[in-house]
Length: 226
Image 1 (spheres, rainbow, N blue to C red):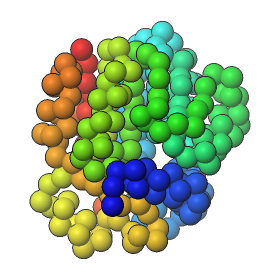
Image 2 (cartoon, rainbow, N blue to C red):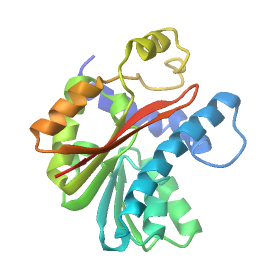
Image 3 (cartoon, rainbow, N blue to C red):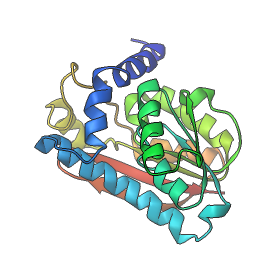
Image 4 (cartoon, helix red, strand yellow):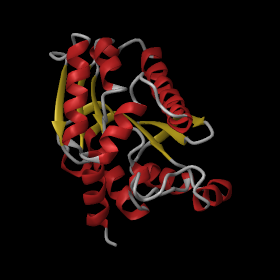
């Protein structure tokens, strides 16, 4: 199955059954134990990024792109902190939900939303953030996406991905971390060294890194600067 099919699968999934599932996970309502575990893990990633960006003390001066914003878990608190945020997602349903959530907390005028895949994003931003998106794409496609995101970022790029290790590969194969094909898209793991090689060749330097890990969620987070 080719790269285009991966993008189509992701778009259709998050506009249909995946939307309802992940809207619950990224919300605060009742969910099952697996979904709660994923919610906690994802929030760890979001909280780490917020801590990094807040630590610099200049969020109100920054223009940021939240590429693959989902329901606004990161972009809404960034806007609340005073940043100028453009938030996009491949899923129209996800963007609509993000707009509703932003409106509910009085931030609808502080955010700009768009329905776009990563490769069609344009503009220049102080910081580009892309969380938990690369897991949906194989290495060659992920590399293309990273290169494009790099072109959009002036001084900082923050990415997360599911790291490819022997342990996680085995766990993935036995299905412990990922539901069946009827519930999710295919999940791709990426070697951290491969991701770093791409970024270093593009002129980036690793500034900070972190790992979010729960029973059913694992994500390596990298902050690159130049």
